[in-house]
Length: 148
Length: 81
Image (cartoon, rainbow over the protein chains, first blue to last red):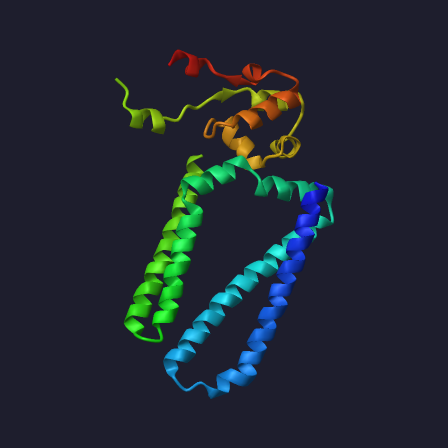
């Protein structure tokens, strides 16, 4: 459990660094880059990516909060360890094809973001397809979790 | 004759005495889960025969109650196949 505690501390530090870097990057972009942008497609693309990154950072903040709370109490830490290493959860993830579905969805959404620079309809289609893949992944996971 | 696809897809529900043993030991699902290194949801799924525990988890649960795997998990349906 001591090794896991160190791993959690490392994850908290890593998460905090990522959040700090993201805030620094966004602040710099808002001060120096944004006033110079004139192309609406570029503005849309950057806004979309910014929103996506903010979403990831929000999830990261929640995860850091959960981990910090778990570190304060041995039982909570064990519960967190059990949740992360639970065989049924891993089985459900495997059955739902979780990593592949999420990665495919993320790739399609990224392609959608990039294509916004060239053609808006292609971009919307790709983003819709990406969202659909992620949604299907979530629904399959819920269905498998209810089954097992 | 059973096809290979049937053999791969078939899911055997194993009956268990976990709920009974838990009540004897006055344990909640949460407490047992914490002791054997799993989650409350997994214990629930095993108890209601939705999920079949792995050999390692079955061993941990049986060892916790001081019994053998066969005394906690009922393999009669597997033997009858």
